[in-house]
Image (cartoon, rainbow, N blue to C red; front, side):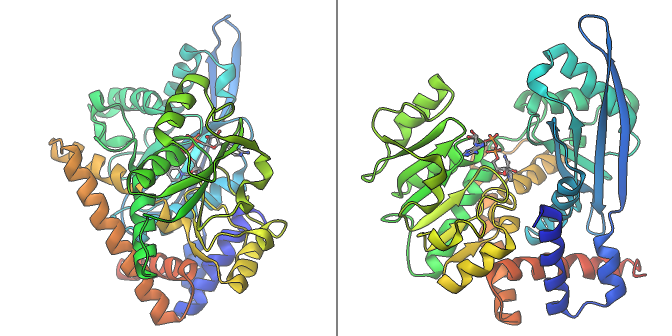
Length: 411
Ligand SMILES: NC(=O)c1ccc[n+]([C@@H]2O[C@H](COP(=O)([O-])OP(=O)(O)OC[C@H]3O[C@@H](n4cnc5c(N)ncnc54)[C@H](O)[C@@H]3O)[C@@H](O)[C@H]2O)c1
């Protein structure tokens, strides 16, 4: 099932549990606006190249739309629609005053020079500057984009609208980025995992973890979980997979990854088949790389008791059913990886206040939001007698539905 079909299915199940009016249900699914623009730039050799830029703005009932901009050669409109919709439910679950959006440019960033990427980003911003804004739609980095991309958008947007740091988040610190943003999704995963394990009478210390993906989210989650006494026994990334049943030395692994651009070849571990990472023995499995990786082909062989969805949409609905029968507890993406967008919200707040928070304040506020979010999800599980995924979906959908009705937008 593709990402959009799976997201729509989860939304519809939640709408039924909530007893939503069918017209409201339909209107919540339809994106607010879909933008598609041609972006033509001169390449470094003087020739012209055209790219398609897009932005799906899904919903703004609770506040400005919020979501990443990705640069990737295979931009799949269905996936972007799904991710924009997931942002709407995610910001509502986190209870931050935003809606949801997602977008990007169909390009291969590694084939473009820095100055070509800058020109492309500036042309894209020129084409959409009237449709984004501090109180309209606030982009952030995603696959293939980074704080520098956000700096170019900020600068180009500010030419039209005056200096506007709050128009994007995930900026460099020197341009109004927030302390703690880099680690935020991984730190949110730590707080989410702590909350789940506490509910089951356990703590991070003494549990065995396996992590797929060792980029921003996976490596920060590994570092912070390890600092709390969690034993990380296997990790993987695009270069390969490694295992040490006595626990990987995460500080040394981080150094190795920095020097070698991947986990492959790490001394104090043995190489394993990357396809087996998800079915390795562990207590807690953290997919932190790609969507759709847990599916009917491997769900039966998963040994973890808990799955923390750090990646977006890592579990296919068919796998959800298989894992539920096995008693595996899944902490869903729209709650588990919401730490990043939550600290993006703190960045926006700091820009609007014109006041920079220290890192301890950012981390403490994040903990408050993640801990409260877990309690809110659990309350919905009790009300609707459902699992954590439906608890999170009913929580998010209900908040957006209430805002929609209060604003008088019901069809
Ligand atoms: N960065 C954030 O703030 C954030 C927020 C919410 C959700 N997410 C989601 O978390 C996931 C990871 O994001 P990130 O920011 O860490 O990205 P990243 O690009 O920094 O890291 C991705 C990691 O996945 C690895 N990877 C890629 N293909 C793989 C494969 N086939 N097998 C194993 N590993 C593979 C890469 O080598 C890399 O280590 C994505 O699904 C993203 O949408 C990220």
